[in-house]
Image (cartoon, rainbow, N blue to C red; front, top):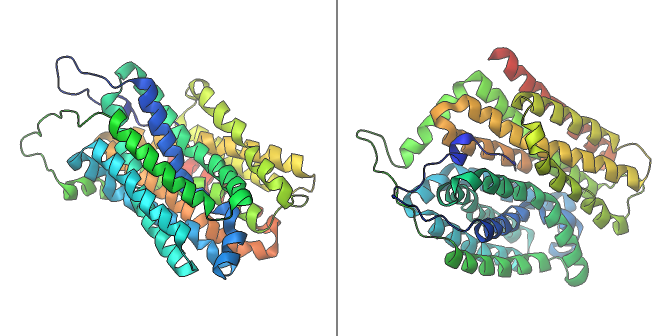
Length: 407
């Protein structure tokens, strides 16, 4: 996900008390970021396991790619409803309840004896995992001291994107040591431990101001801004561009697993995935410099860079070349994601909360469709997957550029 958040979150009002008691920044942000890596990582943990799960379930490898799509779709759809739930029930109960529920659904994935039950468990896992992010964003915006709030939100969103690489590395290592179910069993235990820690570390509900007279409330009112955002041509083009961001990210890594580039064997796969980790550190550190560039310009440039580097991985120059291209590719995605949410938020006005929900929905809608595109093309060879992902990134850049011409 992104590494910047709309300004309404960073400037969320403090609790309605004379002397608010802010949460300790270090342990709060550290815990929530750890939970974020664990939650979002569940989308990616199956990518290194496609072959192993196919053997264990007696299914075709192409069918097993639906484990990513099913999780991603349930996760994306969940964002449209779980945000309002945390407004009603409070942030801590939703965060803790979501983590504990995801522990159960993750265990179900580990115990699934067949593809059909595995897909069902992945849908349930995506639905319970979707409880975390909206409540976590809101919690940091309400409980962290204002001067540290932007840093806290940046750390959380950076952890979401870092999960895409960390989860694959952990999954491959765990599978090599203990089998394909190991990462789900370990994650299930992790959710219990992090959920229990969250109950003790996170503070109860912050007092909220009384609603204004005649102000609409309830879940139905939460969905009303969506239609207006989608009717706006600039916003609609940006939301469409969002689909390409994680679509090409997950799609390219799926292609690497299904039909590896020339010169990449099983032994080099772990190092290849880990090669993108420096980008997860470098891009947040450059956030201040990047902020001086218009958000839409950043989106267009980053997606163009993603298209070029994805296509460059086809060149038969060996594993080091592919690793370098992936490093630059992941860096480009890490720049595009926050720039898009910033560009969308700037045009959303008072509907920024709804805009953030739609942004996250379209982002993970792309993450759900990317693996299926890779699956369709993997039979033709890695060059077809990488070429398609390059074309999708180009299309995303074109949509973002078009948004600047119609506004």
